[in-house]
Amino acid sequence: SAVISQKPSRDICQRGTSLTIQCQVDSQVTMMFWYRQQPGQSLTLIATANQGSEATYESGFVIDKFPISRPNLTFSTLTVSNMSPEDSSIYLCSVEGTGANVLTFGAGSRLTVL
Amino acid sequence: QKEVEQNSGPLSVPEGAIASLNCTYSDRGSQSFFWYRQYSGKSPELIMFIYSNGDKEDGRFTAQLNKASQYVSLLIRDSQPSDSATYLCAVLTYNQGGKLIFGQGTELSVKP
Image 1: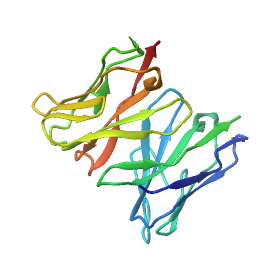
Image 2: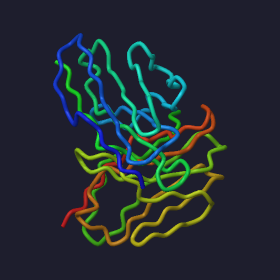
Image 3: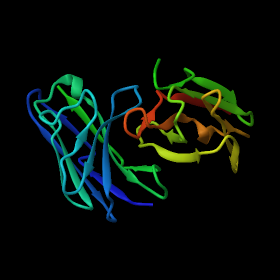
Image 4: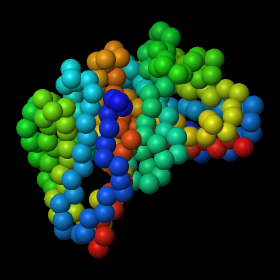
């Protein structure tokens, strides 16, 4: 299955700032998915990123807050904008792995907003 | 009703016992079901997937699916302390255009 590298692995940020998370895959993939996992919670899909088109956002997530780039088939970024403590979460990049709809996840980016 | 619900944990079992993890889902049209394991501080990793009614076995793990009851479970036989983790049920639901919805997870603790 694909190998996913995410960075930063963790960061501590100040309220009102923005942080960009990078996701690099070792093979070309059509779709990349960004998930959020808040403390003690399960995974919530933020958006699906396709190369060459705008990302598709889930209900409750907007492009102004979570802009996504997908410049090629192996790379994507998620920016968390104008951060507040409520944005403190783990953000995970994922791609389809060995089979359709079988997701492989990156190691995640643990974000703490003070 | 949540789209995917799991029995609340934590679930504690002794080493060598069978751990039973349960999951129900609301979208009757769902066709694909997944179990992920997530160790503390780590990202989820796939254990099994199941598409058809019945049982699917892989080593010590058995996934069971009952579409009529909208129920999927994961049995772990001969539980080991290394199985201690949070287990996430995920369902591919078409209610919202075909996306993977995760349950809240069940924390399993296997006591030596």
